[in-house]
Length: 237
Image (cartoon, rainbow, N blue to C red):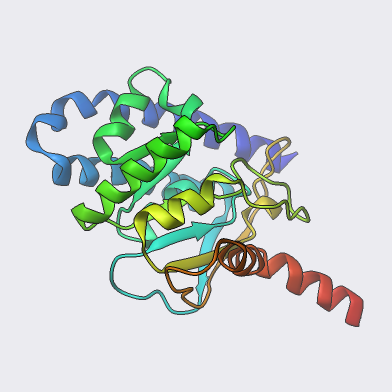
């Protein structure tokens, strides 16, 4: 029962605060992208604060986060990592679903922040656009974060990567930093949230320019590391 109460309070606080932060984009946008990114991180900090102080959820980072420009590729189990990684990674550009870019005001704000809205069906036109925008971001010197499963995936599920990942990997030509995350254990898509520590595991850097199948296999294994380790532990037990 208490988890439901905390979840409802969290939703009221977070979504009410989100409205004011999104509306504030119109005020800060004229001052340039740097100021806009700083403003957007207020939203991420609101999420972090509400998760910690209302839900009892905190973050643990395992592994070494390298410095420089990378393509960060993360497991996706909850909305939590989409904002938390913006703070952890220092504000990379992001790849998001085309449907999200259509949300009034918010979609416009994400474009100003630096995002690529992609069609999950991965049509030829969508892939060409993804590669063009990805190459442009590389020239700007920005890192990029993508969730290659395309949507939130419940704990225990390890679907193949969407085909768009290969196009993005080729377009940006950047080394990949894979990130495993277990946020779905505490923040399910349905039902109450519960207290816990979300683990972000930073994997070994995967070089740019690998053949498609090798790159996809290495990324898939790395972002599912926490899930795979759990299975090994259960089997050993």
